[in-house]
Length: 89
Image 1: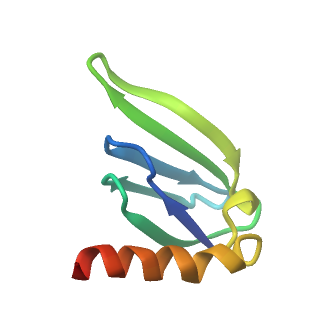
Image 2 (image 1 turned 180 degrees about the vertical axis):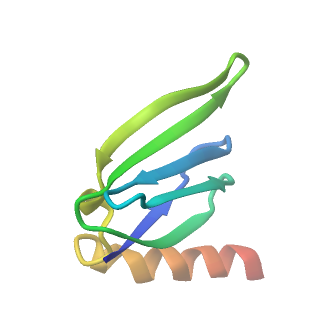
Image 3 (image 1 turned 90 degrees about the horizontal axis):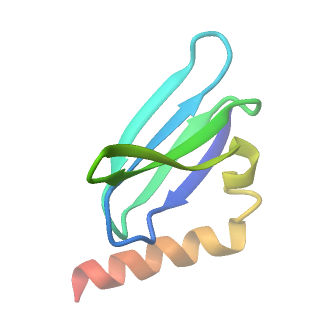
């Protein structure tokens, strides 16, 4: 399992779906500006679905490794601190 991070930097809610082997499945609604930390198998695929008038539309399909916290380590702490500052202010 790898630790991953996704930040919804859109003005609309999105649905994150993570699909891996051995029946691994994770689905979460992410609100605008929300940061989502999660664990997933390293071979899993990530799908990000945007909401539209006609329903869900696939926006991004990527390897979960593209969202690993170690790959984004310099940004992870900064993203979380910025979000906490926004919430406090």
